[in-house]
Length: 154
Ligand SMILES: [Zn+2]
Image (cartoon, rainbow, N blue to C red; front, side):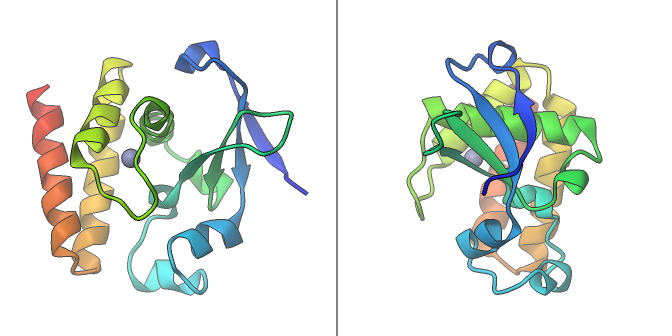
């Protein structure tokens, strides 16, 4: 059974259908290849960065934003809004599973910035950089720095 934490106001995010935020720890961990929640602490991963967005199979909704921990997701309003706007952007600029498209990530970042979420997005990218460094992930460090430069230049 799906437990809906919050319904998203479609016109506010330019959505043509209904969307909701749901919390599903197991799905999020599985999607990111993590065996359990301890890895988040071990690798200094902020769970808000693991937010997923996908088309719903549930007839009541068109899309779901899947978060690891809803309470934590809502702790900082700017971060929350920036993440929602970025994820909603992926409807227009999709990125396939296990694919990297820097251009589409930047397009989604721009959608967030255009809707007034620049400060929140900066925080998201700083958290991403912390995570990338902790994971020693050179590629993620490079991509995140590029995204930071591009939103500053926007
Ligand atoms: Zn993205």
